[in-house]
Length: 449
Image 1 (cartoon, rainbow, N blue to C red):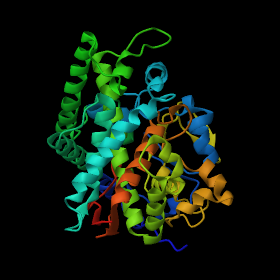
Image 2 (image 1 turned 135 degrees about the vertical axis):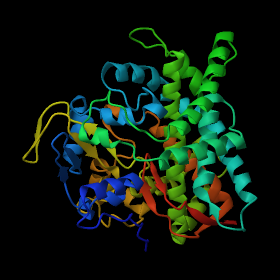
Image 3 (image 1 turned 30 degrees about the vertical axis):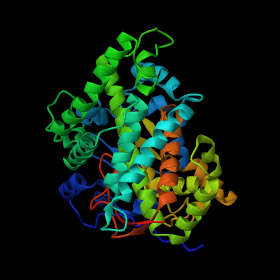
């Protein structure tokens, strides 16, 4: 089956100075990197204060994430850079603080909890289809914005049992877009290893405050409802009332806001990115789109059990996560000196794991840039799927909402493809910021079926 090649972003040309690389990274991290990273097992950049290593060798990736994760903690530079938005959420903490947070959070996603969330998720997807029907058959639709509103609606319904209003959705999408466009995730002071107490000039603080104010009001209101005994049984209530099994303590209001912020980021920003890229991939492959639509039509009425009858649609979403991972890079640091690939690596070095490069690595994946959902059912590609696919990270720090995200992606595709067909209007330009976005949006022609 013929497939098209999913484009890569532009890479750094030869001869660019260090300052030029930094300037390019401020606009888009991809444009500061060399094309050879799609074949390299490890690349390094040494400076007098801090070294950085980008690692693509699967066994070393697994070593950092699964084998010895305590020796490769989350980089403190990332926690500093994201403090305005995420505070001390489970996404950036390490050690006992992170362990306590996961002990409280993980039970909210266990067992049959996803099935309980399904009706709210379906309502949000159907509401998105209704909004899209008013624009179908007209001018191209900026599907990234529509996916963002859908994902925001889903996470608000799952967390707070209420749909997000149109004005709130637009405000959140605009604030996140401004926050991402404000500058690089990590400041130059963090790159060179300056102490954390040194003041950083971080742009995007106003947008971060706006997002936190919106979510903070909802958290405060839920705390009142819990105290009054009127709170619904949703994700927010479960997380706010679950005690640490070791200490019996629950999250306080400030810490709960930090946790909700990462759920909102993971359940909104990354999910919107994945859904938009999946629709764009299908828009460029009429055969795959028709096959997914036929599978969805045959699956019957949308219900939780229906998801098991959509294997190809699920593989489409998996392939979208491979080609366009919402979090393109995972930044760790070495907690002790290491000797890997005949290199002496200093304590405190950046140890960067790149799903973007790992998922398109030319020495791991057959035809890595080709959109090919069928690769997920071919036995001969089992090894790459197992060893070099980490859209949700891996090991103890694997995303606790991975099952939520997969259900959301497959259900959203099912609801939208049941009612519409999609065609490309222009080619998007992937850029690496906080998450993977398109510099010019993702514009599709939408036609009612």
